[in-house]
Image (cartoon, rainbow, N blue to C red):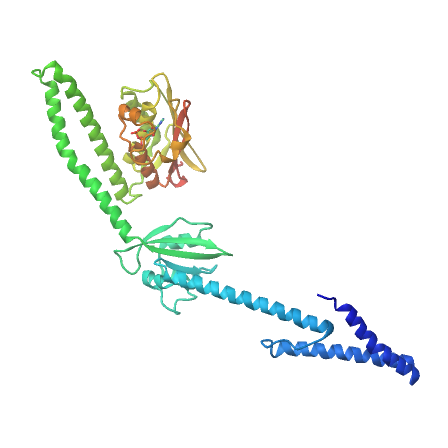
Length: 429
Ligand code: ADP
């Protein structure tokens, strides 16, 4: 683009010079110069007026024609305006497409402002939680969906955990609510109907529970006969070993069935049902005795639990979780090793730890240990008599107590399995 400024300088000279010359011949050079300058200024004022009028009245039309610097200003502004318009159109299109796609989604979507008022929602949100047309726009979501879980999540900072709630419209349907923060304090509420998933889960749980229950009675009968056979003096020597093996296998099956029943009970029963006072030092001592009576594992089992340490929870469940950890430590540690059971508590909650200097676990296995029937070394685990469900039980018990299972281990060095319990489970007095 050519520079406009030499042209503008020429325009100034052409306005002022002839007027000064004419003035010099007639009324005086100074007067001529002033008139020339005034004419030049008047022309600029006229251009400025045209621009201002165009801004004020008809910005939608093309800008006025102008020459020199003004022509450039008009053109610049026009180009800027076009760019802005194009961007606006593009944004509007993107927004329209976004809304259309969210509208088509089977999941409900509600956009909330920083005060949790509804800015926008899609068709599915209307069907799932009964929001209505324009009537509910601008209303705080908490007023329309009276759910304590949602209230808590709305008050919390960051990304709250997804919630599973009963539908406010149909008590036999279940919804999963996920609150996602974005922008400056706004949030997106995603609502998904999980009724089918819940029903399938229940069917699976019921099936496992019923099958385990049904298997228990015939197994008890077989066990009874095997016991009688093993004590029968008429049984020849060559049958003794197969009968012993059959007895071992039925005991193992019973242990698996019991663990499966326990897991399904932990999954089905409402959490937090029991909040009795549980004496950690007492159950640690009982577990130690039981561990030493197992007949395998180290003889050196140490306890470091301050007397009188207590927590609130379901005693049977906590006993089962803690003993599973200790029995595992016994199972995966050599007879000349050591198992340490300890309890510490502080402002961050309580920690029940079981440490051993046994075989240890490779890091790649650690995230999968709590999966049902997951074993690092199947042959060893089978031989040692584990059911493969122990850590899954521990994980569930911890979830029901608002805690979690933490695992640290290094192969060949040993492992430390810890149950971390929240502060509200501690008894401090
Ligand atoms: P299992 O009945 O087979 O022991 P668990 O669910 O209790 O089942 O444990 C899962 C797997 O975790 C075990 O098979 C074992 O490989 C590993 N594991 C658990 N505890 C320990 C431990 N203290 N030391 C080493 N490995 C362990």
